[in-house]
Image (tube, rainbow over all chains, first blue to last red; front, side, top):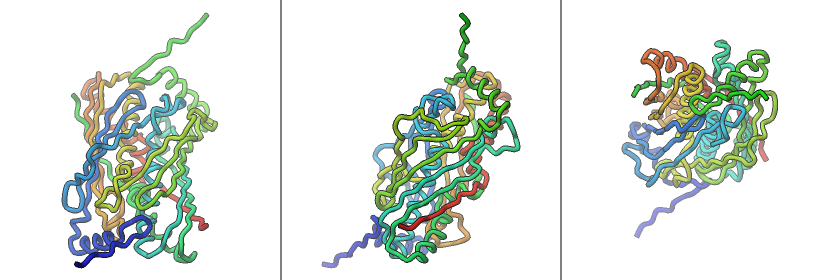
Length: 189
Length: 189
């Protein structure tokens, strides 16, 4: 009987990872993913998302038996009751997670063992943009800064190479750094 | 004894809202906010954020007695165990929430009562960008589509005016639609 030795690195099944890379190189359409969210307004600054299905690797995913649910809220200074973190804070959660996972993934591909990553993020916003008080002020973040503390089995040069590569290949970081079209339709009823 | 009648619209204290607008117009520095997140890698595609304090309206906020915690994960097809929604899905949660809250806020400012908003989002990603298999493919979302079902006490024209205004004034939508610099520093240790 022949068995395949499954290799692990940084908590990832690298055997499966390299199989996936091979499959996508042969059939690039497998790399096409569509992610989704359904959101419902509750009241004021509170609303709730349900996230479950997505399309990827050539089929509808059915690995989640129930949806993830997340609540956006606002603090009192922004007219809410801290029903949840607010949307711009959730964006920092998405960004931190994506850069971290992209780093861990590409470290595994390079054979670099990661011991720990912890990251502090801060982002500046001028709310005159949101409020429409000054049309020269963008509503979005002006800048986001991330400081990552990384412990890994590699040289300083290997870490610098990895970290010059990873953020630029993070889907959320690329979505923030580059302009991505958001098409909004509304239906009255 | 004189009492102030607090006005409410769409679950928002509009008396406080207009007071805030007046205060910011007199002292624009009050509109400067800084949001933050601390994230820690757990293993593989799993990591966890703690979100609590922020700076805004001229001071450190202390309204949250404990942090919000959120876990990023990945589905099996992306080498995880569905430990949480994944970062690009959290970005859709942030986007939905921000456009919804911006819509509700500006509706309140215009005296438009909102009965319900429910929103479906989908975003397309080609994972060859993340994987570094084709440097001509962006790692980020190619496009995000939002369909908002809105019930409100207003004419079709008033709704069209509101919805032409709101997404462009949403901080998360503006962060996605426009290029926002993300500065990443790393410290080895």
